[in-house]
Each structure stands twice: as structure tokens, then as C-alpha cells.
Image (cartoon, rainbow, N blue to C red; front, side, top):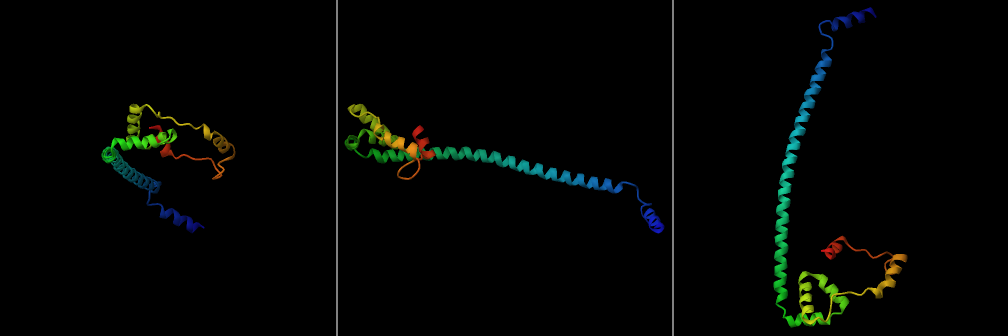
Length: 163
């Protein structure tokens, strides 16, 4: 027992007390500082990428708008090749409920429908849903008899209708 005690005292005699703890603290502080520096660099890179992403998003939106305008002009050129008499015949053959759906299909069809209605004053754009009321009530109460569920509308269709 005494021999172990003496050896333990002589081993630690040359060192100062607490130097190991200080060394460990400074090493931990250095590692933490290094980690903070790496995190700061990553955050700088991330900020630069976010700025670039915003620039590209605005460019993309601009190009998509130009593409949509081009497609609309191209489609209008194609559809304008049809004579007005043919458009009159198409619109006159539609019932009032179908005329509403026709006008909702695209802007060009809506414009043609407006032009023809102002010329003729025959068919106004309206739809009558009273014939389907009993079916809608049964769908709400019992679910759709055909599919076993209520009819669903997609988000894109609702956005199109609200434009």
C-alpha cells in the first residue's frame, strides 16, 4: 500500500496541478472555434445560393410568361384562320349550358362567344343547374351513386375557373 502511494506521488511531482484540464479545455475551444468557422462558411455559401436561386426564379417566371404569350398568339393565329361564319355556326349549334362550358375552355373561345353574342343578342351566357339539384342532394347525403363518393374538383380546375 505504501509503495503505491509513494509511486503515485512521485509520478505527479513534476507536473503542475490542473494542466491536463486546461489543455483539454483549450483543445475543446479550438475544436469549437473550428466548427463555428466551418458553419459560418457554409452559411455564407447557402446565402449566396439563395440569392442566385431568387434571381433564377425571377428569370424563369419571365421566360414562362413569354412562352405563355407566344403560345396564346400562336393558337390565336391558328384559330383565326377559321371563317367567322363557321364560328357562328359552332356557337349557334351549342345549347346554353354547353355555351358556358365552351366559353370557359379558353380565352379565344370566350372572346368569340362575346363577339357573336353582341352581334346576335340571341344566346346569353348562363347555365341552368336546377335539373341536377336532386342528384346533387343525393350525392351530398349518400355519396355518389356511381362511384361511391362525392365528386371531387382538382385545384388546377378551380384556379382556372376563378381566373
